[in-house]
Image 1 (cartoon, rainbow, N blue to C red):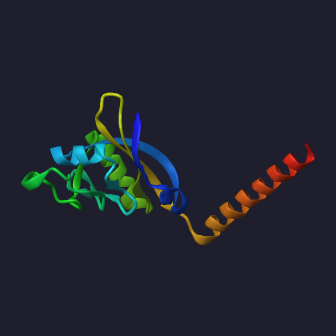
Image 2: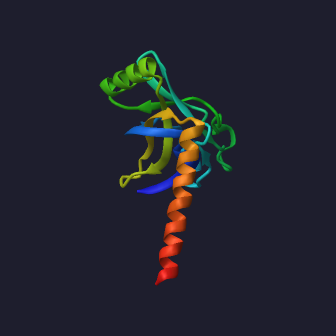
Image 3: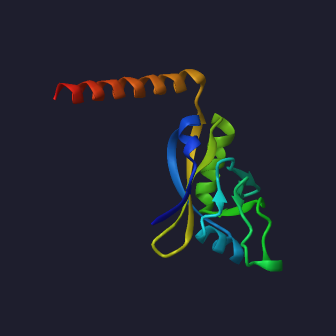
Length: 149
């Protein structure tokens, strides 16, 4: 498994409850751009249209040698998941105020592009501050332990 891009900001902004893996419907030049690591998923999110799920805001840069066959970098891309999974996720997102955030995009062992999605709830400022404080306290404890030995 080779990771192409990660959404580092998502872990700070959201509390993750579940993970999912989805395939992405891509065009030929998009796959070539992915292999060159020319993708950004920082502002992306998943949305539902009818009984299908799409990724919105994922930027795959145009392939340099793609000429007229190139793709639109910001187009909505269909996600490939089982219908019952999509319906279950759609129900959770509509009723409980959750959102579906892409965490990483990668190629699996067979060379197929996959998107790691997480069902998450937005954190508030207090949660973020607590996490920062906890990290600082742990860092101080480690530093003290090193100084003792």
